[in-house]
Length: 498
Image 1: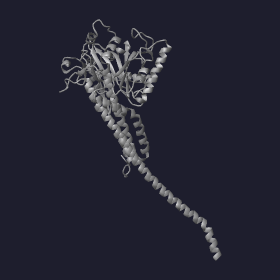
Image 2: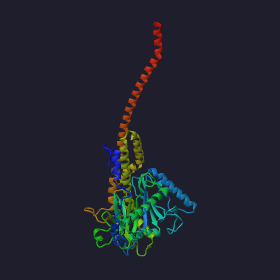
Image 3: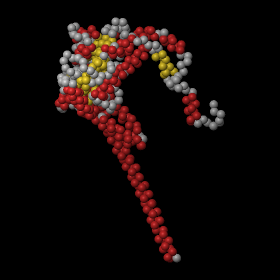
Image 4: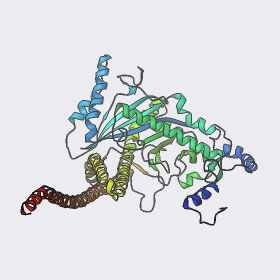
């Protein structure tokens, strides 16, 4: 309590307010030990329900990474392949394809859909296919090698889709992560604590594992083939998609397929609901869906027995063979989804840049600098704007994928969607998103131009006022100067008259 009759100052009130609150990073945990012990009594149940049940097996075979190249990235992509081709020749090997020559041969055709299979990437000499060579490049620790495919999406957009095949050790990482038991604990939340149960710990650990792999893939592209996502001009990771097989559970199940399933572990993986998922009409059991709450991650999943039946009973069951089969059967599905991610990411970054900089324009001191930032953002988005125009045109005419995307249909179609295919839905999504991005880019550019004109007029008025003040000051100084010069002469005349 204050000992003075004077009202407390603002600083004093603020200090007392802060002193009454516990630090957010160190809330009081006393008295919660008994609550934690009661929660821990349920840990065996939580650990069992979030683990992979007996007889089940979850394997991760590969992770696709998709990078895009606009005109400003195109020359760098060609140079990267020329460098790798030169290295292959130095090792006395010959490539089955020439990506640099293929890229140079691309010409405006008003159509899209061309692609080129590449030699695999590997850190060491190893037999990946029966014949052929591979590009020798470093690989992130999670992966043994990678297979890739170049796509000419449109005249101004090229995509590189790389399937990173996991090592035997890391292919079991998801299964082993789900099998490890956890113990409930308290974690700070606001002014108190919340219980961190085993299921949520596994969910967060799985997200960290996925984020680490995605970051490693982004860094790999940045070192070898920098593009829109990996060159540093965009924030966040690039689109990635996992290929997962299960032994018993049906991934992305429809409502009737979920009955009787003890599938809590599938919820942690993000493959427990088929509402927004797609299933192949050609390969039984093969399904694709995005992970709820994640913009950049998707999953291609299938049961082992259904994949074996699709490949043929006598086919090789190795990880390499399965990846190669699914890549041939449904690789374009990943690309079609990744294009929508590209448009969403470019839109998000453009909106963020505009809102941030237009807020700064309200400050006269930051106005010119903010307009410079917007101009730089618009220059960086020029490629994206050109791509958006092409994607809008091609998607509207259903020319983006033509017959390259295999037939996938909704797992649980909504009313009137029984006959829609993924290619049709992607064309609609890309057309709408690209059209909106194109209009937003033009509106932002026009807004910045208008504000720049207003600021220029304002600065001109300020300049005119400054010139007027300067002129008045010069005139005053001239009068003073003339007066100073004339005073001796005036005194001399007065002296003569005197």
